[in-house]
Image (cartoon, rainbow, N blue to C red; front, side, top):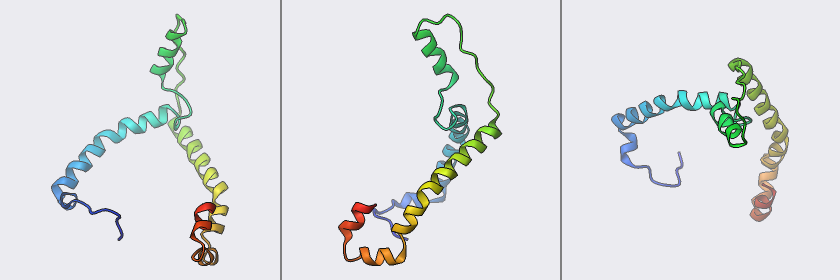
Amino acid sequence: MYYPNAIEQICYEQEHIDNVWEEIKQNIPKYFQQYVDTEGGHSIQGNLAEKLAEKFGSTSKPKKKEKDIKKVLERLLSETIAEFEKERESYKEILDLESLEEYKYDVNSFKNTV
């Protein structure tokens, strides 16, 4: 496999791999929850809404609506697939073997197309 830079030897040591994996496992639940709470970045978390409301002079707390995690994730997945499909055709044309063969002689044209 091609890597543009040399990978440090420690990255191949099992103890280091285990330590990195433990760090990842500790943080995934927090970030996954944040992803769900913000609906993939399309809304703000409750505590930020409260801070904004307070900043604008509101004396009452914003109402917090419980989210159906399954529905949120299904919607995010559907949106992501739709976005992918929208761009897929143009990439298929650009990365077609015949097109790539032509770009071999005009690399700048390929760069401008992509």
